[in-house]
Image (cartoon, rainbow over the protein chains, first blue to last red):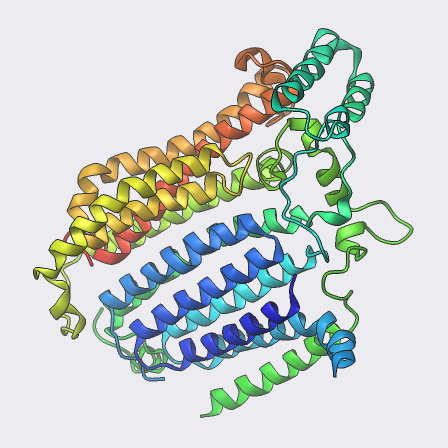
Length: 81
Length: 176
Length: 264
């Protein structure tokens, strides 16, 4: 573990989480949620949890963002908040 | 300043951020109006908990939990060559196979002699990784169920905003 | 709004209590903390056994794979069942949606650029080249999961993602031609059955459910350790089947509202 690396990524994660929840366009929110997943993947690789990082890179940054986009495609793209 | 980082920030900073992420997720689940936003908040909540579990297994100066212990004879001759090591494995395998009815004590003694001892403090704790690895995959499957229900709500009510759905339900709603 | 005020109050109280509780935690990265080393005066943490004894027990260097497929086999088996059940649930929900006639739905701006234009030639060709490489890498991840990061879950998700990529880049039909609905649900069930089958065969040979050591005469290995190692590979293949099929089925159903036509 390297503290500075942790520090920077955790700050980025909080920023990404807040932006993903506050952006009005749901397609953008889904994409920023994918970025959030990728940042977590980096954090886990740095903590030594390589298997978890691998899974998160495939699932969090890939599949779950695609599933969100599929739902946004079939519902409304605009959000009220 | 350096002391501040080492004494106060470093031991608990990660846990503070996990709590903050968890609370961001919880706030979104309670207060956001859009159902998809609620689901994003739920996912953030979930990842904060998974982060917490994985960080319990972190050890300072430790490597990843993939370790093949070297046979002791092999490690003593610093650069012995690959074939010799393989011979050792085969010998160690065959010996217990002959007298397998005898029980496991002799078996494990043989193995302990053959390999160097691993220091557990230098390898990250694998148990939280295992638990969380399955939790991530199950998490995406259940997220799929939630998204399917969201689409069902959209078909039924024509919207994914919580207050509009509530208005339709309370006002008697449409015919179906 | 009132709900936001209440939400803020609840979140501030909960977060404050949790932040207060954090001060009693062992510091981050402490090798002697209770989860890593066990409680003071009590027994050692079980993770110490896993780290020191896994290679002796099963000849698998990747401790995570060994714990996942062998020591905690029940857990992983029923996680696989949960994934399978979630896939079935999504299928049921979306199919009931798809059969009813769709209400006229207002077109978003997204729809305008998703329907056939010639940008798709470049994207489609590139993805058709990439997909086999992704699949071969996924098979490597499954087969080499004992020695490097990877295993059934990761490889299965990668295989599923390769089919999703095919569906995204060209058309859902192109992916369904290669892996039809009948086939992927059959694969999902076969995956669970492979996993449970390894446990049942061990039971017939007189050991406990999922105790792979007794499979040694069936797998023609040197000792029970190698039998455990090979059984783990078989179990991971089962997991990969289920996860691949269900990931693709979730995407196929969600993106088309269960009709499996005119996807994203």
